[in-house]
Length: 137
Image (tube, rainbow, N blue to C red; front, side, top):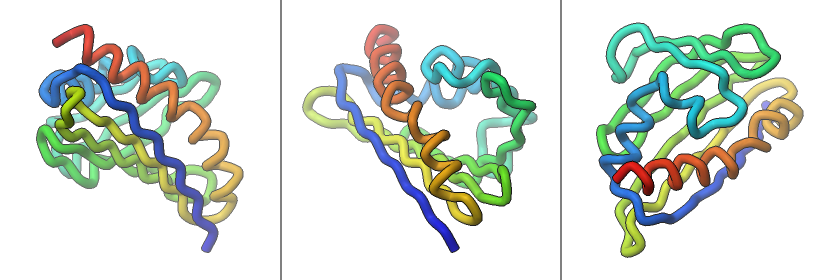
């Protein structure tokens, strides 16, 4: 099976609570992820929660929250183009404030091709998330 992984971390003067607030309010994901037009979630931000994401130029993509640890991180998964995409989001307190890490793992056919496309926006998204969290307290 093909696999692809990309990871990016950013440190900044935000709080864990500010980052968590931006993650757990899926309607705000478009504020920090330039590739996202909109996100909706049916139910609570918890394991098993299912939602839809609209990415620029694409039909809505279904996702499911597979891991949620409040104020630590969460993972969401989606199936796309014969592959499974796992988006892992982690936050930890550090001397500078927080370190936020986003990791994308793609497994299955065309993992390299899909991962390269999906992963290219990861660094900018993490940087915008930390900047937004830093400005919101």
